[in-house]
Image (tube, rainbow over all chains, first blue to last red; front, side):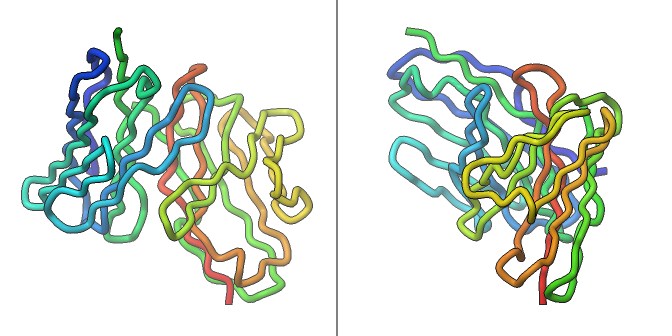
Length: 109
Length: 114
């Protein structure tokens, strides 16, 4: 079957760095997405990786290794507003989105 | 974990026809479901919030007469794109809310209007 795994919850300190991992097993691969979702709001797009390597966007970076079925989202200089759920999703060979359950990130002062 | 399905997974239709997309929560009841469009730059735009037994709440700029939403049961919401045009071609994603801050997303439906 198809599966996306990511930790349920993580806690980090304001100003620090946190890495949220995502492993996937899907039938085919057409890209991996990271979304941020604050409680009660729609998800906002953070990144899209289709080739191996690191994509950097300001304080957020996303890494992909297709051979390992692995990605991570790296958040630097954490701010209180980064407290949210982070969703990992993969598009399979049929371009269907397989979603992870999301990682709830709690930022402490 | 909770599973949300969508049907069909992809559909091609002629301009002017209507297309119905189903969203089902397979192993839980969802009083609230959400419909999104995914744009080429990968952002998700919330179209409407669907509440079981009542009228959907549409986001600003979304035509309620064009995108008909019916949430007839606690496990099924449907989105009907009426008189579809090529500009309606997109990837439509639904999600279902299990708990207040817990949403589960469907695999999406790719609509192509010729």
